[in-house]
Length: 201
Image (cartoon, rainbow, N blue to C red; front, side, top):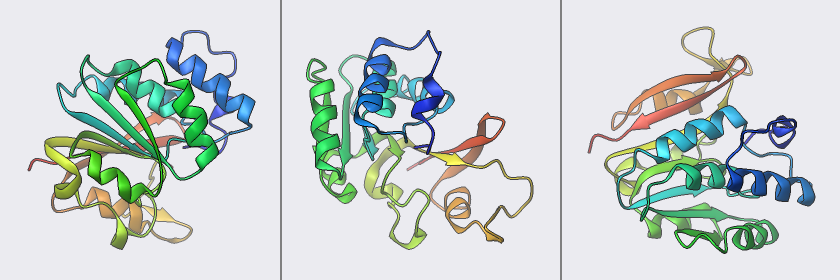
């Protein structure tokens, strides 16, 4: 989720209908931290690679990232997202009321694990995508063999090891060097990148 993500959808006209609805709901709710459009299109693409099972998301917000995922998901694939803010969870649940494959939960991100394992997991709020690596999700407990996880809102690294606030970027290094994952960093626009990691199993 990006601090000015919702504003970045201004003047875009080629959005999937679900994404348009979610962006409108985020604006009405005064929620500015939606995922960037470029990252959303990446979510849509990755969702299409899940042939069966479930896609998970931590940190629903007002549902913009979830809308991108749902717009790309194949028929029959379940999508489960969890949001710690009760009002946002309720708003997004109403937004997806007519999409039977989508479930929006209210609670701590750790509770999402019971809906997995996942073919794709988007760590957007919780899951310690950019937080304390010691409490981050364990791929073998959350992903099916061959499953992937994605984390957005990194700044493209200009050096190795990557640095954050003058120190080695522990969160980024955790995923890029994780012994159970094959991970890479993808630039989605000049000033933003995402980490995509596959769990071979």
